[in-house]
Length: 217
Image (cartoon, rainbow, N blue to C red):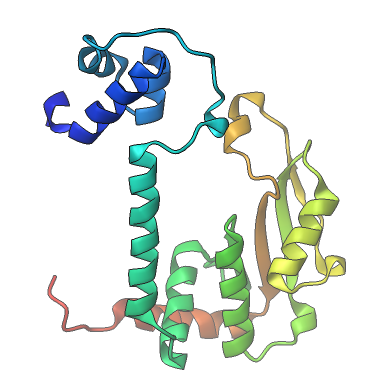
């Protein structure tokens, strides 16, 4: 496409440059190369302005457009799916387990960092499987310098599993070079040690993945 094709980015860059933004800030804000920004704004009068933290800046044209597009996509998704039937709920949970669940015989384990996904799966597991809820266990993967007590309280509320049923966590050594990639409450897993229930789940999952469909491809 080249820089000529990025009309919205060019317009936003020129407007912000006129407000005193540096080339480095423009490139970071618009997620484009600094060399491209330099070409777009080379004829814009520039007076250095006060440095403003990114979190304090009002949303620019591209950010507002992105926010609006995401909102429309969410609304369209809700309209298209509506309420899940019992069968659709079953299939959704099986698909999640196929991607994120443990396959070793006897260990029903689902792990994720997304609290919405973990809440969905725990509801699914309790709904479709005849299990003693007191047998469910949880485990956290959490960096050593993060608050374990707060993380347990957070995931306990998400998964509906009392703190007393959280087994010994895995505490990872903190790595300053990856600080921005960490999750405040770590990664959680829900666990059930039951061969009959795990085999039941695997049977359903394999049936789903091997089922025939009329969809081409």
